[in-house]
Structures are given as structure tokens and as C-alpha cells.
Image 1 (tube, one colour):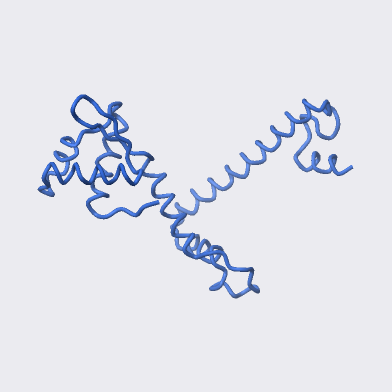
Image 2 (image 1 turned 135 degrees about the horizontal axis):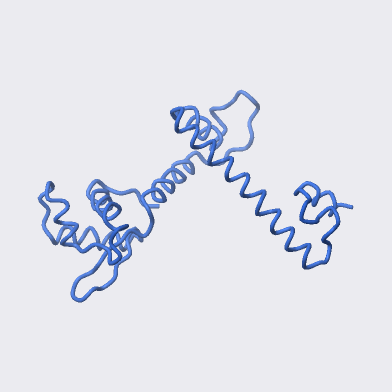
Length: 173
């Protein structure tokens, strides 16, 4: 994901703030008008939007003689991608002995990040991880139930009431 310069970020902020309520997107004029404090020429805003379209950050659609722009992804999705890109900078290093946290690559970076968030942010992360784990278990169970129905194995330890662990154990038998 591309990091944004100061002006690109200001333009994206306008799009992120205005596009959700606008089915048609936002025109260059509307973006320029929203950035009046920067005293930018219309052509400058048009160039920035064109470059953002080239980077895949915005989608544009012709509306008469003008272009209409909307973000290709939400602000949250963009920020999450930046965070993942930053995490990629740590690289993947082989497992190191316990206590050598400075050389664990992504793991060390994640640990430092987790320790640096506020209590409320930690609660949000914890809830998201719990929801994700529950969702993955539910998805695995649903896929296994579908496979059992196709193969006619319902009613064994892989039936609808069985846990994912039961299903794995039954498959090993």
C-alpha cells in the first residue's frame, strides 16, 4: 500500500469524509472547495486525484464532462494496510531462544505494539481476536458439516453436534 504525502492525505480525508453519503462520489471542484484553507489551484487538486487514481487509491467515474471520485477502500482499511506493511518491515526471522525478543522479527514488533496500546485499545484488540477465533472455529465446523453431508457421514463423531476436535479425531480413525 502506498504511503500518502501531506496533500494526498488531505484529499483522501475529503473523500473519506464526504463519499459515504454521496452515491455519485465527489468532483474535483468539491474537493478543491473543501481544501480552501490550502489555497490550491483546481488543476493541482485534479492532478493529485489523477495520481491517486493511478495508485489505485481512488476510483473515478465520468459524469458528463467531469470526473467523480470515491475512495477505493475505507480509511480503516487503508490504515490497517499501512500497519501490515509496517509489520512486514520487521521481516520473518527464525525462532530465537526465549528471552531474545529483539530478534524475533514480526513477533517482536507485534509484542511491542501490543504493549504500547492503551487499555481501551487492548480491549478492542482482544475482542477482535476472540471474535476472529470464534468465527474461524464456526467456519471450520460449517465446512466440515457440509463435507459430512456430501459424504454421508452425518451421525458419527462428525455430525452436527460434534466439535472440530471430534471431527479431526474421527477422521484419524
